[in-house]
Length: 134
Length: 149
Image (cartoon, rainbow over all chains, first blue to last red; front, side, top):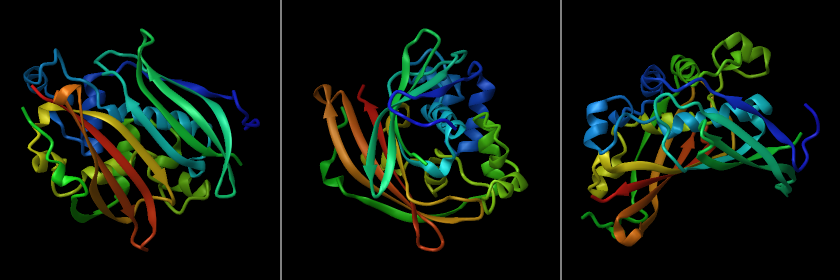
């Protein structure tokens, strides 16, 4: 891995369109059985037009981007805000970059701004990761 | 219109234990499209220096959700499942989480806020994940937004 400096871009991760199968699999695998993600009747009763993706599925995609970039053992902190809903068919792209290098507990940490966006460029997740720089 | 019961700030839910199962780690990796073999193949994980298959960074939420009740904070505060959205999530990592671990999960209400004149209610649950050796491996904060209607 090349040197991590302020401005270093994390290699982007583009995800194939979110399908109902994706959400059904994530529902089973994640123990998050909220029907709003898999049951269109429930989603409509909740005032939506259709089911929506789990926010945590997109956060898992951000996590994939991070662990593709650095070994997971270097990850110290990982957080995000869920800014917009992800719908069936959306193509999510994860991006991020190093915005600061800081010292904490004797380690050099890279503070990274990370985000997920749909094909319209609307940000769906906005967050931050702290990564120990080897 | 539901109002937040601020007397519940600091409320601690009963702790529970969750076994981190290898099969579930593999299923989770598949469900999120993770293709790095260390997350699904024990031999690949060992070759990479792991004792077995590690849990992915967001997997602690799955451990949390594997408790005896789905989001017990909803019942406690009188919130309908159809009214909630996930607003914020954070994880802080102190140690490793692996297949075969037995994790003790604690959950506590750490923040409650009204916004937009009470039309939106926010509640944050702070969680800790401690392994069978008594080592705190992860802390997490989950903020749910409740739309009053």
